[in-house]
Every structure is written in structure tokens, then in C-alpha cells.
Image (cartoon, rainbow over all chains, first blue to last red; front, side, top):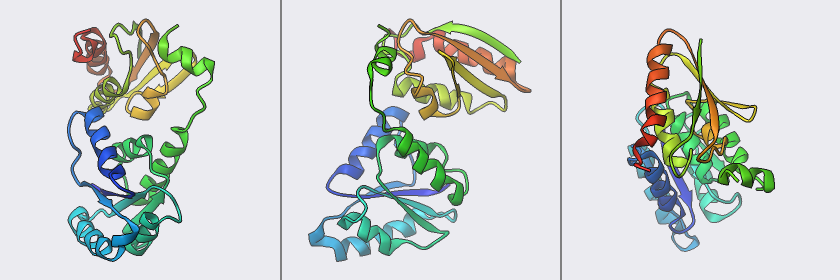
Length: 136
Length: 89
């Protein structure tokens, strides 16, 4: 099973984990959050490395960060090892849920599943989509 | 292949937690399981796919199961809908 680490600003990572836990009915295993701020980047990097050791059970780890170019994502970049520890920016709840769903697949295919899951979760809710959810 | 139409009767429809229960149940079977609503056909083992149906209470969906354990799969799926996903309303 591939480990998942959310590297994000503030409490976003832990909040996403709590949302996924609510939906799935239990807290998924091998899933953690790293709260990175500009002030604590160096210590967070050390913490990230120790979390990676815990999360990598042999199948690799997928890192999910929020904004490309921001400190959490820049920190994430330093944690990457191609083929073993991979990273994606733009994390949202659809991306996290899709990543959890397909984490038994190889890391190389999970990356694509996570990216498309996140992209397809961004929708303009026009009247047609809104009617569909309310049944009216 | 088996197929059957079902009406969604729980108050919140196929919302996130209900979709999670459905996909977790569907994932236990070898058979391919599909759900169709308004010409949109999704894999019942994919939570984001099922949520994209945005199926509210009163929606009619079509369930399809195709494979070696399709009878058990269809029975399990129908029981979930009939039991309102264990939500009581």
C-alpha cells in the first residue's frame, strides 16, 4: 500500500484527512499531514523525512501539496525521490479520495489517477448540475 | 449480465458517505458493476465516479453487474439501496 503525505499550509492537510475520514467512516492508514510554514521550513524538512520513513512500507509514498511555488510545495520538492517518493501540487478533497481509492496500484499509475481525480473534481456548477443534486 | 432499475430513497441521495459505502461494497466483487443515471454510466467501484452522478432522493438509477459473482453483487447492491445505506432516513 502506497503511503500518502499531505504537505500543505496550516491545518489544511489534517483537515483534508478529517474530511476523508468522515466520508470513509474510518481514518485511512499510512496517511499523514505535514504543516509547513516559511518560518519552520528546515525543521519541517527533517520531520518530513522521518514521516516518509514511517509511511513507506515498500510501495512508495505519494506527496500531495497545495500550491506549486509556495513553501510547502518547495519543501515537498526536496523530499522527492523519483519512482519512490513522488509529488503532486493542487491537492483537494476529490484528489485525496481518489488517491486513497487507488493506493494499492503501482505508484506510477496512482500519480495519473490522483491528478485526473483532482482536475475532474473542479466543476462550474451550472443550473443543470445544481438541479441534478437537489432533484428539483 | 444482470441489470435492474432502482429508486434512490434515502434523504441525502448518493452523497459522499453513501457513495463510499456503495463503492466499498462493490469493490468486494469480481464482477464489473456499473451505475447509470441520465445517460451517465460510471464504475460502481469508483467513489468519485459515483458522486459525479449527483443522484438525489427520487432519482432512478440502473444497476448492472457482469461477472462470475454477479448474483451476489446485485443482491448486495440492492440491499444497500433498500436499507438507505444504513442512514435510517
